[in-house]
Length: 277
Length: 261
Image: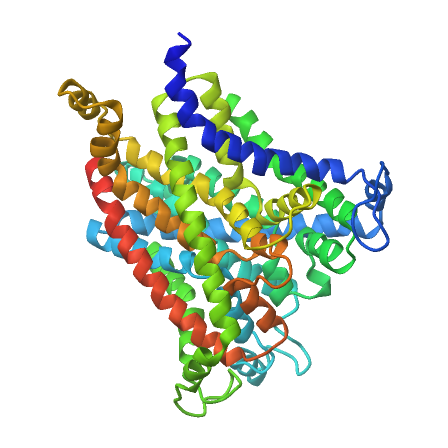
């Protein structure tokens, strides 16, 4: 029996040990450092302290957490709403067109993230074509800006996360039996009714995956609010970076990261519950 | 009954939404004006300037070094992981599976922050080495995922046959298993390479001063509003490379998809 396990252990050990060392231990360290004192010069002091945890009671934090959850939720809902009809029509394409369109969806997905956000920064720029056009037809006031607000953050977040929502929904739609839609119509359902009460429940598993792969990374969003947002659109990620790089207060950055980690785990627990139910 | 046209229109609009910003960027890389809002004639001077920027070339070299290391190491670790997960069913593999899944769902900022704290706790100097370790960590899971998909329709009887015909374990692995899995491993490696080249957030946390990769350098150029047209030129070139890589990897993974049908 023992000798039988040798090949299993040999092939498991490299990745297992690597991931314990560089994923599990580091996440545990986040929670440990949150209980350390910060040094004035930047860095981690000796001994233990509750200062960083107490700092989380700062009155500005509930608003920050609420904004983070709202931005992530809005982005997720919009991404899934757009992806549903897209996945539907992709699944109905001929195989040749399907793989062509799939390629077209994957390319922006693999295009450098920073560059895609930068493109939007130029498009939404105060002197850009879009702002000028909107001003000329009176949709945008002289002193109003397209950048630096929550709308900009959500639009650009949807842009960057849309492929993450389309791909799992398309994978589910591809396996969906479209004969069910014909049956629903034969039974008198209007197309919209059939779409909502037959198609969407049919690809539910894909929708759950889409929710998780957009919502969870969005909770840790940092680049988009930093580049197209402003001080009023900061998310937890921006605060972590600020505590870490600007204030050099590592314990407080760790405490915030720990709080974010707990927030991230919540939807996964919800999913586990749903699975067992 | 005629199917509704609404979903098709949604698909076309989404593709337009995807490509407008990218097209805008490429167009502007040939714009003589410094400002994106005015077109003042065609030029290739931003491309010329790009190749004079030694800091960009140095960051590109760093990115390629890290991505090469990350894809090679994660190909080995990821393939071993995929192999173990597919071949054995045990409590150890349940834990292993969970461990492989964590980097896929952990937000970048948490991975960056936690690795930074690890490196600080162990007194490791931040450098290209720490960046590479971080990249290997998130690439490993993606490689494991891709190779596992390939292993799903792998026929282990072929390996048994080779063994029956007198091949040693090593021979069977090197001459039968590995060549059959090679396209999957290669596709995983390509994915790892692109993910590594693309990463900004994790790199920013573990890079330390003086070891910029392309995304971290571009980010600081954008923040300082320095040489924005040069970034357009650089972006356009990177788009071409991305398109080529995606096309190649689609070609590599297609047979696997066709077989599973």
